[in-house]
Length: 446
Image (cartoon, rainbow, N blue to C red; front, side):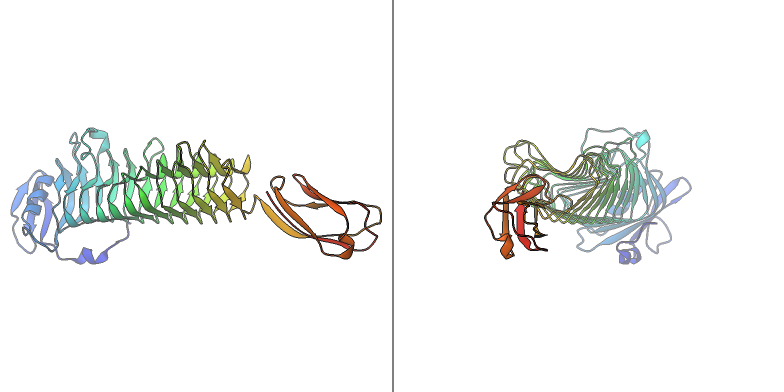
């Protein structure tokens, strides 16, 4: 049962009702007794009904589709229109068209019901506008919600250069192409959707590209995409990936940024059982990855790659919980550098918690991969021992360290050395016997 996202529109009085009687579809004005158009082609009737709405209106009018419909062509939706689906729409065999099309229009709602793309019996056409469940191009204030779409030839919902759009509360099961695609445009919300792809598919679950800006991908569930959520392309920026559950990606990652994506957030997501990486930034800069949970990827929990000069840099990854995989944190590529990894918790990796190659990358304050530590060490002298060792607990030999005597017997001539396990204090003359009479404050950083 799909939850109603904008319940007030379900009770918005319709202007026209489209239904079926016998083998014919009909359109009838609300409260009229007789239809004004009949045909065996549902898409023809619906297009006629849309054309009969008030011309050049600046308010919304509603059409209700009651029953089950078979489309032999696309339905083109004009501005200021509400379409409520009370039933099921199926694309006829060998049509190959998009089921709904919206182009250069504004203020449109399509919601409710089921859309069956009949993929097994429809061709993949080269025309970019065809083969989708709902195709929206160069339009404003378009809302798609509360629809179950399945067996779609290409994309289930495709927004191309849409401003102020919403895709909310839809369920997509098994599309050959991408279930939800945002290409260009700005201020688009993709929220509370449920996407499941068959493991034989190779499509992304949610795809944001083409220089899209101010896109919000929030509280979705995506399972089995080749990449569950993909954001890519030069000029794509200000994208927020927040609070999603992604699992069992088949190829590149649970969440992946690629090809010069900048100024984006990946916050509060759960990535479970993803192939290669839970979260992967490739050739992207100035992004914030914070507060995510990544569990059991095949390779990396968090990975940044820079194989294009000047990219794979200036990203911050903080406060994430990283469990399993071969690497908790990993940098790759000739140009990766200047990233920050801090305040993460890293557990149970099979190779190493972190692999950092950027000369200027900062990694610190992470649990499970200690790069700095401090404390107070207390020893008891016996009058003959000259060497005292402090276990620093760091991942490798510290490059910076300091030791300060805190008792009179500790404040004597001495040398300090370090290795990958200890800070070693060697006195010129053994300190006197005593109980807890040799005490040092210490600090060390890799």
